[in-house]
Image (cartoon, rainbow, N blue to C red; front, side, top):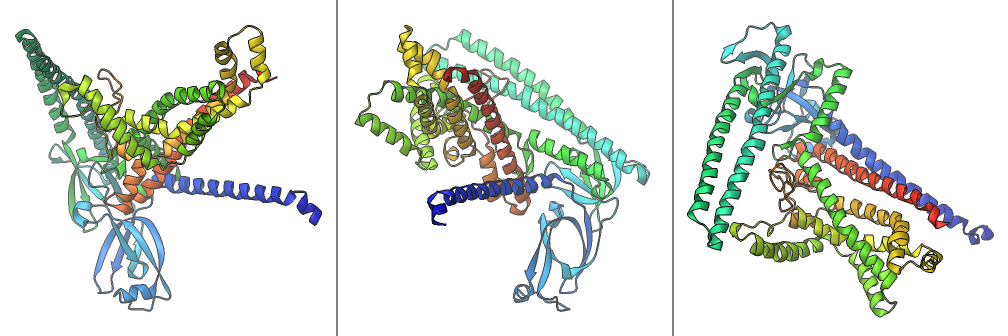
Length: 552
């Protein structure tokens, strides 16, 4: 036994066991996030309950079951709930999404199993997904087209309703595209002309000819704007032509305008294949659509775009700085106390709390550097800041500094693994030190550089605290990339998946509605990080194979 302990085998087994447990824990966490996130898009059954509470009041409730839990009976009794029949030690409690916000008040409601008289999943009960006020649940009764109630057989009502909803959605999307692209472009050009005139004024070069030219352009843009505005209003009128009559849980008929309806789903009538198709549609919409209802509904495309764009910009910035610093420290710097202090400082820099980087970025990049850029290059826009406010460029620079130690340390380790005989052989053949570095050393160290970049990307994509100070916002009206010159707008604020999770999970007015969305966004953030890392790993493996022959 003593010999076995001295051989070191127990430590090997303990280390292997610890690694296995860690991997199982990580995989279990990822599976939990994936399951809770992806199940959010699965169409849940719609229930209709007949209830009778402890005061004897009866009522009907329609909705989806979001959660359930076992509650001790003593807690309910102490809270004032009275049971007609002893319920036992625990009582099942259901969290039901009731929708119909404008009539019910709350989207969610807890009901006790002891209050339920009956529960059924009736055929014909529909869920309406809307652009505002959340979902609406009820029985479609009729379709109103241009003010006239259509005479449609009950068996054909669903098809007719879907046809009218598809028409309204198509027109609404056309109107939104017109508003974002053409009208947005005119507004952007008018603002540029205003700044151009202001710039001429500050320079004292605003002549009558220049002023007349700018006014002529603004007049033409105003004329174009009027035409587009009329077209936009006409599209909105067309989209709001039809409506649907629905019988809700109160037994009353409610009229919903179809320009506020995105989709109708008869969940209880669906087959398994229908539900699977609806699930794929929901996942696709979550990835490509814009958010709605204070980020608690719709998709997260702006957050995905902002996260990927910021991380790629950070990678472009941090890679050359990190590699140059590592080459200087390893190849040129003399091995003395100063070099040693610099290395210690770089390592310690990795341990600084990320929020400190955010404070530094806000003070140095945004206020000092950005404010100076505004004073020098954009005085016509002042006092409104251009680069002197948080933006995607300052976020990328802040995270570049945050991840710089990772790239430096990884690159130095790669440089140290290159045999000195390779360098000496290159120098013996007449190459200079710079040529040896550029043609031999750096290519051989490129896999290590990519490893550092992979670690940097993984950390940058998950950081949120510094971004809250230097660029990320709850809802960005425009992306940093569009068709307006100069096409890439680095000064704009952006959305981020990590901040989206924080905002939806902790700042949402309706936490119960946001909980599944938090899991879905978390799974998406992990997927984006994995995709970025896999891309970098494939590049690293390609470089490793390419320069493997130089190592022998």
